[in-house]
Each structure stands twice: as C-alpha cells, then as structure tokens.
Length: 133
Image (cartoon, rainbow, N blue to C red):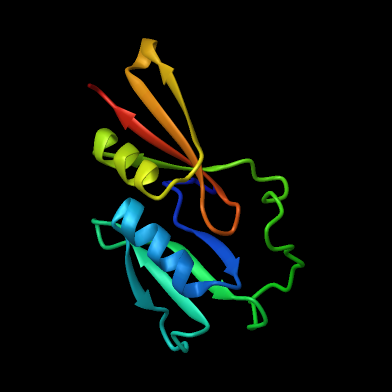
C-alpha cells in the first residue's frame, strides 16, 4: 500500500534562475545549493531550515526527467498554489511590501490560521500559512 508521508518538493521551470533564487531566499530564507551532479546555471535546489530541498529549480531548455511543456509566466496549469507552513508573519508582510509585490491575506479564525498569498517571479502562487498568534 502506498502511504504519503509529506510533500517532498515541487519543481519550477524558470528563465530567471538568479531572480527566482533571490525571491525565495529573501522572502522565505530558503538556501540555494547546486543540485547533485548538475551545473548550477541549470539546476538549483532550495532548502528549508530543516535541511530539506523543498523547491527544485530548472532553467528552461535543460533536460527534464519527464518532458512536459511548461509556459512561463502563465498561471501554473492545474495547480492553483503551493503552500508552506511558516513562522514570522509580520516580517514576511514587511518583506513583501518592501518589494512592492501584490499579495492577499485570509484568516481562518476557527483554526487560528493566517494566510498570505503572493506569486513568485514565475507566476507560481504561494500560500504562506502562519498558525497561532
């Protein structure tokens, strides 16, 4: 029987490797490292504070394990958004506003959840979840 334990990572195809890395490093403090056995201009992995590669970045035009057309800048197909559990709500809002990015918020009071929605440079919509206060 297959049992899902957790989301492992998601993959983004990008024309702007440096800009995408900077976005995630600045906003979510993710650490960029070269993907194993790859050229850093073509593949980078972004690691969370727990040392897990949660985002894989591929430069457009590089090989993929499974070929699939991706249209840059369009909304991300059938995937509406990717969600991260986060800490630092106020600091995150301040970073987004300092960058002049459009964002939306939502509160699910019943479960003590504050949500921030913001798109990355590739038009991937992120849901940043903050629990508690």
